[in-house]
Length: 90
Image (cartoon, rainbow, N blue to C red; front, side, top):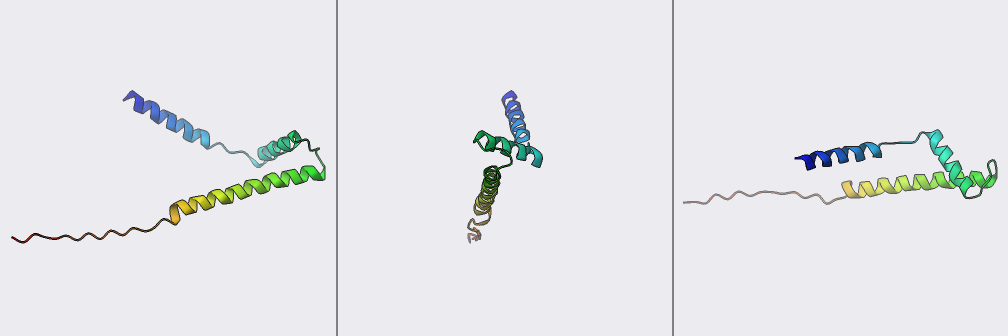
């Protein structure tokens, strides 16, 4: 019984940890830090292009994820089961 409690607690912790989101300001700061790490200088066209590329990659990944979800759930074949009940005559 204790193992099931631990598993439940672990699942709850994982679920809550996956719900963390970044505000747009935090995301922008992280993107700028990434581009600065690549060597781009703040205020240059190259920095703007780097930020644009990161945003476009993020949006493409979101579209790809959505398409995979749609393929997984909405394009599965429909299975219709028709039961035939046969009564045995005596």
